[in-house]
Length: 181
Image (cartoon, rainbow, N blue to C red; front, side, top):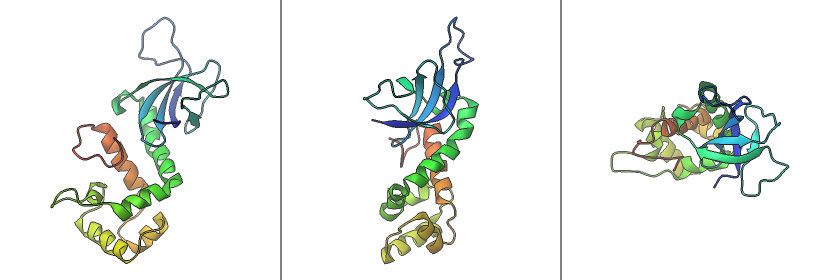
């Protein structure tokens, strides 16, 4: 269950595609922990900013900007503005939770005899995967900076992880999910 979401897009006049008499404000959010895409119903009269962190947990009250979570949505349900904001907001979430993602590089295992979890990250081939495995045997990675210093072929891991998360969002039929359930 998500407690917080980041606003990807806010439509104070409602969704333009919905042909109803009374259009209600709508916001699109990204769950902080499980990266769920959500359609949110903001409270009347509130304003929201793209990238803003909002509370969506069970204890919602008058202090919070969200009235309720309408539904979980697919990537294709997002507005084009929300889709274009998604990589930037994901990267910020990844940077703020660096320990969680460094743990992935330290603990990722083989999926099959021919494929490793690390290879699912865009831009990581077999050569880089083996370099990561060899380096983590010497000592675990402590940060993204440590990772990129020791693995000179790996640049901006937060962007690579963000790309993988978006791939998992775009195509729910992907065989192996690393970051999204």
